[in-house]
Length: 180
Image (cartoon, rainbow, N blue to C red):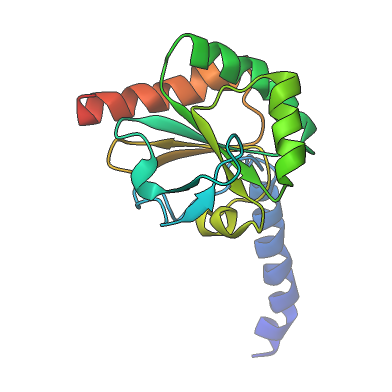
C-alpha cells in the first residue's frame, strides 16, 4: 500500500501531462454544436431592413441556405462581408442574416455602408435567438437544409480558404443529400 501512495503523484502527473499535450493539438475554432442535425429553433422577430416586419421560422427559405450571425460592432464581420457579397451575387445559396445583440439603426447603417448579402436580416437585439442557436459570438455561420435543419456550423470569419474548404463542401453535401 505504501508503494501505491508513493507512485500516485507520479501517475497523476503523467495523466495530466498527456491531457495537456493532447490539448495542444486541438483546433480552438472547432467547438462542437449539439444542434447539428436538429431543427432551427422557433422565433418571431423583426427584420433589420423593414424594422417593423415580423418574421418567423416559416419565412425562411425552403431550400438549403446560409444563416450568418453578424453585428455592426463586429470587425471580422466586415472582413467576411465581401465573400458573402460575392456568394450572393453568384446565387450560390440564399443567405439570411441574424443581427446579433445590436441596435436597429446601427445595423441598418452598416448594411447601407457596406452592402447586404442577405435576403433579409433578422434583428436579434436581445440575443435570445443567438442563445437558442448556441452562438458564442459574431461571426458564426450555419448551413441549413431545405427542411430547416442545421447541418454545419462555422465559428469565426469566413475567409476564401474557409469558403472553399469548409462552407462550399458543406453546401454541396446538403444539396446532394436533399437533391436540391
